[in-house]
Length: 485
Image 1 (cartoon, rainbow, N blue to C red):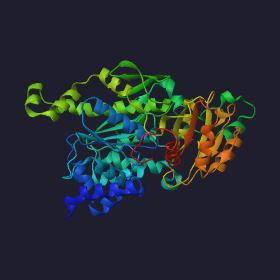
Image 2 (cartoon, rainbow, N blue to C red; image 1 turned 180 degrees about the vertical axis):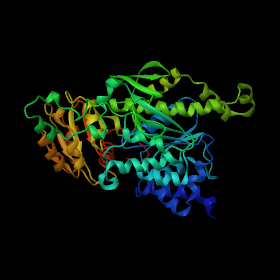
Image 3 (cartoon, one colour; image 1 turned 45 degrees about the vertical axis):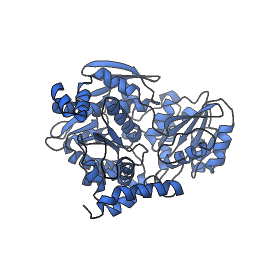
Image 4 (cartoon, rainbow, N blue to C red; image 1 turned 135 degrees about the vertical axis):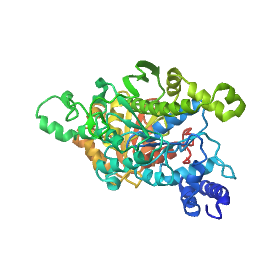
C-alpha cells in the first residue's frame, strides 16, 4: 500500500464534494484522482467482501442487468455494493466506492455487483479477479473504440479467463457461448437462453441487415416479409468441452414467453410466470441473465451456509447468507418482479401532464429492440443523437437500424450533434420528420411543450440522454441518479 493510503477515503470524499459543488469533473472524476494517488485502493477495498465480486459486461443491457442483479440480491437479504450510474470505467467504480466506504476505508457490504465497459473490464480484472462474471452479448458498438465485434469478444475472454467461481454466458450469442472454452479449470460455466419461438425477436449481430439494402433486394416483396437475413437458420447455442460449437447446451434460466410487462422463466424444469416493472422486451431477456447469475451466487452460498444453530451463534453475516441460501425459485421470481428501470433505460418522467419515456440507444440491436418494444402509435417521438466519446464517434451503425415502424406516426423532433445525419437516415426509410434542431435544450422544450397529455418517447444516445435529463430537471421532478441534474 502507498504510505498515504490511510488518507485515501478522506481525500476522495473531499474531491467528490468539491466536484459536486463546483459542477466540474463528472461522476468519475474523484475516481480518476484516487487511481493516481492510491492505485491499490480498488483491489484493497473490494478484497474485503466475503462473497466477492459479480462483474457484468457485454454490449447491450449492462446497466439494467447490473441493477437487476444488485436489487435481487438485496431483496434476498444480502448487503450489496454496486455502481448504479452507468459510469462503467474502473475510475467510475472507484468513485462509487468513495461514497460508501467510511473514513477507515471499510465497505459495509457482503458482495459487489459491478458493471464494466468491455474494454475497461480488462483493466479491472488485472486488479480484481471476479468470483462471478455475467457476459451478456457482443454487438457492433462504438466501432471507433472496439473495431469489429470479434475484438470485443476477445476483450471479454480476458474476464472469462480469470473468473474464479462461475461464468454465466448467453447461450444464444455464438461469440459469447464460445467463451466457455476460455474458462479455467475449477470455474463453473452457466447459461441463460431463449425458447426457440422467441429467438427471432433477439437477432444476433450476424442476423441483422440494413433495411434499405434488404428492401432493394426484395424488389417488390411486401414490407411484412422483411426480417433478419438468416432468421430461419438455427443459431449455435454453446460449446462442448473441447471448445467446438454445439447446439444442445441446457440453460440454467430460459425466457419462455413475453407479454405486456409479463414474462415466463423456466428454472429447474418448471415455468414461473410473473409481472415485471421493467420496460421493453429486451429487458425481459436481461432478467433471465440476472436470474442465472443470482442462482450461481446462491449455489455457492448453499455450499458455504452454516447450520441455523451456528448462524445464530456467529452473527448477522452468517444469518444473511443462510437466508439467501434458503430462498426458493418463487422468491427469486418475486425479487425480479420488483426491479425498476435504471435511469434513462425506460425511465418515465412526468412533464406537462405527459409521461416522457427516456430510451437509451447506442447500437443497431439496442435501437431495433427499443423500436419493437414501444409502439409509436398514440405517442410523439423524438430522437437525439450525439457522437461524443462516451457515445462512440462512428455513427454509421444507424444505417443498420430498421426505422420503418415509424413511417405511419413520423418523428416529431430530431436533435443532437448528429441531428441532420439522423434526419437523413429517417428520410431513406421514408419516415417523415416534423422538425430538426441540433440544440437539445430548445428542441426538447418544443417537443415536451407540444400536445400536453400525450405520451412521448425520446430515443437518445448516452451523452444526449444525460443532457435530456438535465434539461427536464429544470421543469419536472427528475431523480438524481448520482450524476447530478
